[in-house]
Length: 228
Image 1 (cartoon, rainbow, N blue to C red):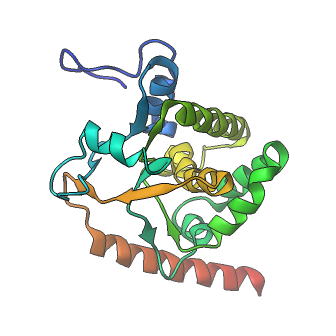
Image 2 (image 1 turned 30 degrees about the horizontal axis):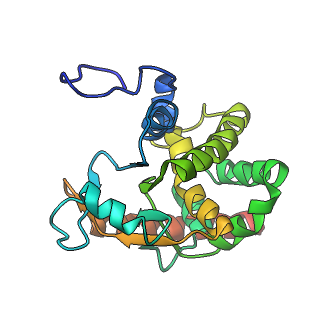
């Protein structure tokens, strides 16, 4: 993270870090920093505009005691899942980003972590998924997840050419990680709890829904032309 930070705030460009990768990894540079530098019983990640809501009051933030209680009952706390209805996780990625990037991630899983391939294919065929790279879990499990995730992402980084990617698609490793969290959880058979999240800005859900429908229509036309 670059720029002026108020006194008392932790930075992800200290200690063992990958802060310089932020344009491509977005919030994952903070996650990597937490993995390598924090010693805590529970670790996770919230988004810069999204925070877990209290299960007892969705307008209040989740507090540590509530998180501790929930993690006695499950393995991972996640934000409420998104259901794209008209899109699978695979087609949504293909229409919103660069399909070849997701295919390369799948190839790496096939080569390096084949025991996760079945979970990957099943999750990509679903319309529902957890986004934002938001999660909370106990430190031991968090360490296992980060070790698995960053091994895949660092290998993917070696293989991708981002020269034709726009600014949003340059954040490819953050986008891919959003899809891989569910894959890891599914393959491990972990117990999850979903919480609502508080968004601190205007999320423009209607605009996003319209854009998704437009992208899907354009993608279908492009695939039809390529098959003729």
